[in-house]
Length: 73
Image (cartoon, rainbow, N blue to C red; front, top):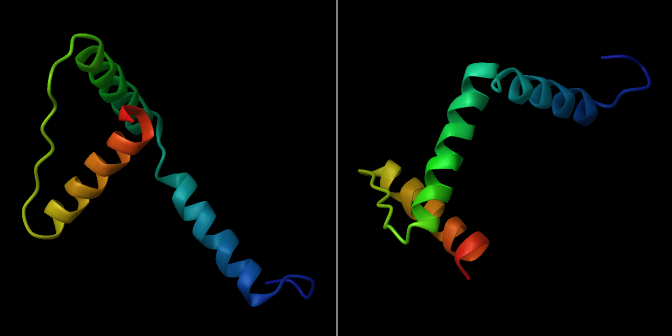
């Protein structure tokens, strides 16, 4: 941490660097394939089921809600 950088700034920049490192090309390609499949399902009027168990169920519910309000409404 430099003298001109606060502890908050150093922490935030460290977090952002960790986050950036998660988006490797193969991950971005997988997300792009998923988005293309979801778009095709939407265009064909098909259903998409998102499932989870325990904490993953909460994640699935949150994702479904994001889809509903982000693109479905």
